[in-house]
Amino acid sequence: VSLCLVSQRPKHLSTTALANCNSHLILRITNPYDLKHIGESSEGIDSDSERMITSLRVGEALLVGEAVNYPVFFKVRKNYSADSKHEKTLEEAAKEFEQQKETIEKETEEFL
Image 1 (cartoon, rainbow, N blue to C red):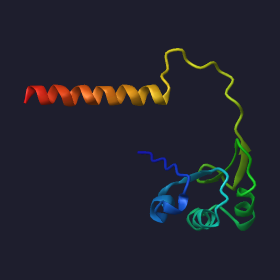
Image 2 (tube, rainbow, N blue to C red):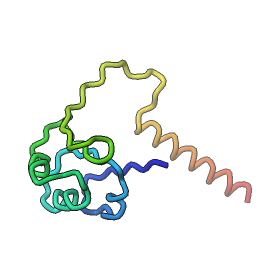
Image 3 (tube, rainbow, N blue to C red):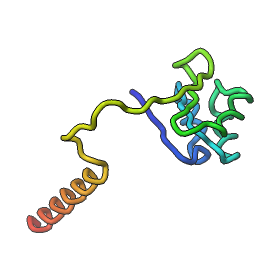
């Protein structure tokens, strides 16, 4: 079983939930409350790493936890592969989902 927590406001995530995540992939955080919360719930973050989180650029991240022996800063490379021609965008998938939901609701009403 795996769990992935994604949030732009980590302060609103439970410290218990965060503590149960074995590894943390942390992007730039500037809010002092969010930063403090992450520092308290991530075992592998020292004060130096915590200070550096505020200066991360787009595409840069900090990895801490069981996946690595010590905090690792890294940069994510650009995607060089071509986009799939068969893949839907999130917006297209959401619209299709809503249309299917409306169709099911309509068919249910007609049936009843």
